[in-house]
Length: 480
Image 1: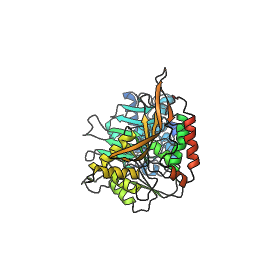
Image 2 (image 1 turned 90 degrees about the vertical axis):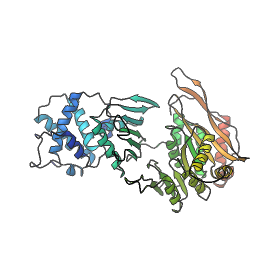
Image 3 (image 1 turned 135 degrees about the vertical axis):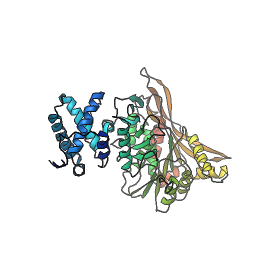
Image 4 (image 1 turned 60 degrees about the vertical axis):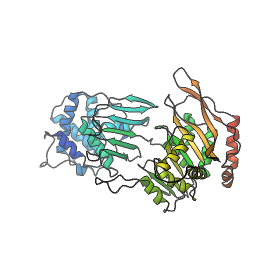
């Protein structure tokens, strides 16, 4: 059978006495994506005896199969090959197990060889937003805004570390004792952070911010209750007429999701350049250039920072610049880009309100070592940023777009803003879900009205603002 070792290399009868070595050897093969449908079953708690049996069978499998040949097969064929060989090993060695136990064992071993081991059932689920692995024995997930403990466990910390190394190696990064902190991503754009011993005391800590396979749209956010139909229409116009936008919010509030939604309304003939620490944006336009930062080498050299990327992309003839997350002095360069002909640029940052977002931008510029008066920085912000969109995760786990705020001008040394649209919490129902509504603030002609007229979108903007004023959104408790 294709993929088996020759008889001189081993057979299913050969029992590996060093399962750890077999695990190390399996990392030489690039991970293949597993059939998600096959991983839909919830993970069951495993006994110590199960892991001992699995280790013995896995060792025999590694002796019986040629990984270099297996890596040339597609996922389904490789999976079928492994299942056949494991079934033979179980028969030859007379392991006694039920059909369901054998199916579970086959799936687990396929996941170990072809994918990311015990993580595969979680990665295949679209309802999970975050996966948090705290050492080999405790794995948490976030579902519908709530954190839950799962039955997922790893054989030991060595297996977990092996999987962490496999994940980060896909994007050319490394994690070990010499470099124990690593930011990376999965091939689908999901964000990954690993912190390994000796920094993490109880074993490797793996955090994955999962992305849905089907890219969300503003219309779907309306269905979830994250924004009203009128508010979504205003956001579509803002994206279309090339307003400079800052999306702010707390951790897990949906900033990147909202940024992806906003990019849907960029014209397909525009040249877009994205700058990210880990490439996770999913733009659908044909002319997109994706840039990603690079950490320093073991010698501490060769790092490429976000500011380096933003400054360089100004020389790449961009029409829009999109920064995945603004964390430091690159805020200055992004403002410069917004103010020098790159209209429609966007970025996200962590802040709890639109006004706090503006203060954070000023703080990031100041901490970057720019010896500029505060008024000069604020004047630059006012001339660069058109709209601040605030996203929030409420205490019931739902996500809402709570503010659409335009930057109006400068009065003295104070930046003035104007809320176009806000979300108000009205109470909660018997299940503890918050009830609220999106409400227009009655602004009939925002500051970007002339820009909307330039792009022939003023009638659409006026209709959305008028409709929002007449029909305030119905209180909703749906989850975001």
